[in-house]
Image 1 (spheres, rainbow, N blue to C red):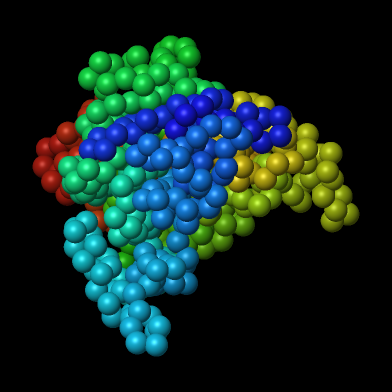
Image 2: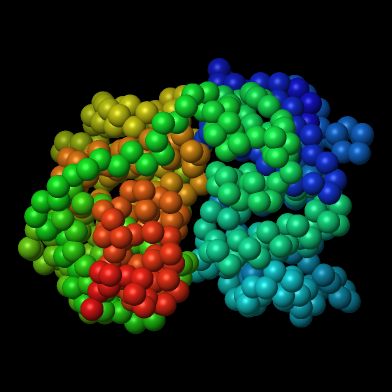
Length: 498
């Protein structure tokens, strides 16, 4: 890709960007959210046409007018957010538009499912090709997207945050597949905010900032600190700016919470000013627990109390009235209405408070959204733009703004920094720490151990639907958390829950 530029009105998303991918090499693309990485990928995928610049493959210039053109050229993209058709089967999603056929042009469903099953065997993933895509976890949706890309036998494969929702074993499996693709001569472009993944997999790295190319170097020639400095244009002094706060009275109490098939007998409490992290492997039941606390899913048994007052289970309305806010893991599906404006999304939970005689007051809505997006340093062109046009990090800030505007007593954040860059991560961490310092009780679900250890006052570790350890900040380390997360508690969890 040479001198690629792309603007949306007065906003320049890309400015003369250069990117060179080589056969048999994994190449990292890094930058803060809003740096232009996703726009560059969409140009390569044929989703957007560049205003200027060229894309060439084997020396021949490509005219990428659509995603179909890119696929035909041998370019496959695995996006950060899965884009499956929920009512089609897994196999149909993999082979959409190119299903195998038999006599009279009829789709050969058996052959399609067999090919899909072979792909999952290669990935080491026990997914049923015949099941509907609806209801798949984000991790399984991502595996379907990976299978789709592999089935295309593409020569250029772009992986945009493919590991954001995968467990350690799933990441290792993906890396094995990626290395196999590289060994077979494919060019792999890998986008991630996890530096340990980049350094493990990639041979070269390109850094972008503010829509422009900054540098391309051999990975072996750079330190992580130098990559971060180039990404943000400044020194990031602390990724985990945790404030020391003396916790106050108990705000949230969860007692014996059970949902058959997901978790059982979960009990814990959170005090004002305290950050309690729920850690564990993917599938341990962490997200399901916080969704039941908020009332999205109805628990079969147990109690939830806020400031001593018991809540009706299975009622988000009751949870919100009691002062609980939930920032969900999947911000695009559960946290935002992508077609609505930034200001509408930022004020949805307060629509009634911002209305008069049942009519939403536009000025009140705009002022509230402007205030909170400014506090969170959200980057956007106009408040009236669809929230779906924002980068992942800025979308996350809108979700946070939406709930912080309600003045919560309890803030639940599920994977608060999934898929966002190091600079924005530091901002989100600083915000969460500041909210705790203001007396809010914080429950944080995170799959990133450094985040758990850097931010939590206490770590509750889950394994197969149960809390296996309650570890104080001073005693928490990677070994103790991982032992509890794999069910090997032993003496690794001095504060283990009874």
